[in-house]
Image 1 (cartoon, rainbow, N blue to C red):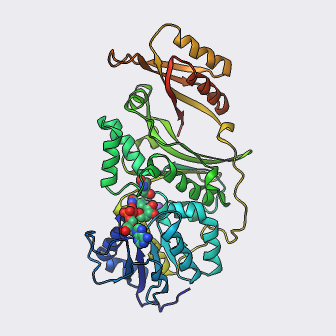
Image 2 (image 1 turned 120 degrees about the vertical axis):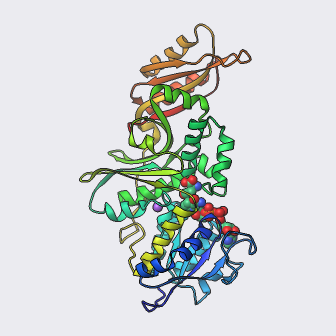
Image 3 (image 1 turned 45 degrees about the vertical axis):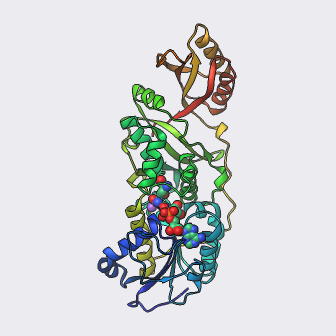
Length: 437
Ligand SMILES: NC(=O)C1=CN([C@@H]2O[C@H](COP(=O)(O)OP(=O)(O)OC[C@H]3O[C@@H](n4cnc5c(N)ncnc54)[C@H](O)[C@@H]3O)[C@@H](O)[C@H]2O)C=CC1
Ligand SMILES: N[C@@H](CC=O)C(=O)O
Ligand code: NA
């Protein structure tokens, strides 16, 4: 690892000057004195790299050494720490991080996709080359989620971890619920506010939350988690009609990532959920995230804060830099050996729960009887049923909501497949899990 005397500046090379990169430079400049005091030495940006040199980012980078090729930051002898804020699990971001670790340079990154897909390899590179790799910004933005799970809860055996892990989705669901605005308009707002990923389908299809859940579960359960063992559903199919039914039933809709250890193995999923209106998680709105963990001794904890955006994310990235300056670093996954196999995962169909099913059905006699017959045959017991009248005469279809008692996921899936095959049902059924939260 690069060594510097304790009073000399910690010299940073930053790759990526978008929402987060520009935010980090702003924060480093605004809080320079405070950071120098806390870190014991100044934090100084010496070199940067991004796609376009001349773009207006709201921060002046003209005095900094510029590299068209981000990998050149690694070879710059004046760069002590590489800060990767490009994004993406492959390509330049991966090449850069791997090269920096191989060269023994500490790395700070906000890249959850990279950690979720290549975390074990990177942990090995970090350990083999004695080069710290810190990634607090990768999970739940400004909330110190990584530190809480890896360090604060290090004494406990954790049974469950997760929460509201995507700011864009929580913002979209909140604004749609509060204003009735449509999905596309609110997504555009989230992009303009700097919350969304470069490809926002990563957010709305649940992948970003799944990246974060993979990281959190790996930290919580002390063993690697394979990203593809997480069951993932997004929020594209949640409509205004679901928000209105949820309200009538006393719930709010949240995209939750939840991982738990069961006797059968790891159960990990990202799915839209109905959460009781009074539950603490239901109160977490807008760009806010919440991380929940449950341990044998500590019980349940929940931490909340802004999960996306320039300021909160820059705060987490810079706190990692302070840790490096202080020499306060730790093994990537909190365990010294990273040779364990990934946790054995169980399929989503092995789970159970209560479900909200929203169908679009023809409004004519016999339809409800056909549907309830299927539920009976599949052993799914109904708790309640709601129907809204058609909004206008131009459609023969009306929304029908079924709320089930606790049932097996397999039985529910079987019932939905059969219901969707009925000719009186148009569109596939929207399934939302009901969580006590
Ligand atoms: N925006 C947010 O609220 C948060 C973002 N993150 C993560 O932070 C990272 C950066 O995200 P944003 O700043 O939002 O992205 P962004 O799209 O605003 O910025 C990306 C930057 O990388 C640069 N870049 C792209 N390809 C490059 C290449 N080949 N070489 C050098 N530079 C290149 C672009 O020019 C741009 O400056 C991502 O990993 C993201 O997942 C993490 C937490 C929150
Ligand atoms: N796109 C992400 C950014 C932070 O991780 C989100 O919306 O949460
Ligand atoms: Na964080």
